[in-house]
Length: 186
Image (cartoon, rainbow, N blue to C red; front, side, top):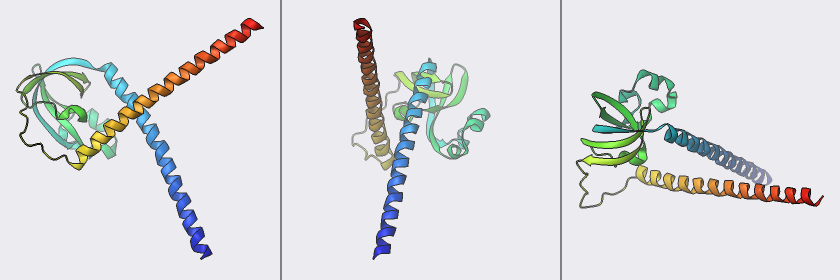
């Protein structure tokens, strides 16, 4: 009886430790992702392009430049990513698209998009064939539900980060005012 209780407590402590570690690792990764998105947004340029085709495929099979495949970590080379085949001027290239805007892009339609390197960050305007809305709403898959939840949590996290920064700045200002008031009175 006593040994089962000890084993149960040890297992419970290990599980709690794993959850705490995952929380901190997830938080750190989310901050990195936000910083990367900010860098992409800063480097983005507006470009007019014709969308030829779009697919979700493995990074290896996408036909991207060799340098991109060499820079990508091994674990991501087999991951499926949204790939868009576009014509920019006379040149036809394959580009990686943001998952949030992948469904908005029309096939065989002209688009003004924000592009950072070979990554399509956002869509400014769509010209040409409009996507016909389906009469029956199609059932959302598990992957789409998870993406939607992730975007919601990301927005919440960004809002919390902004409020924390604002609170820190307000506290710093109040502290500076108190220090200034102390210097004046002394």
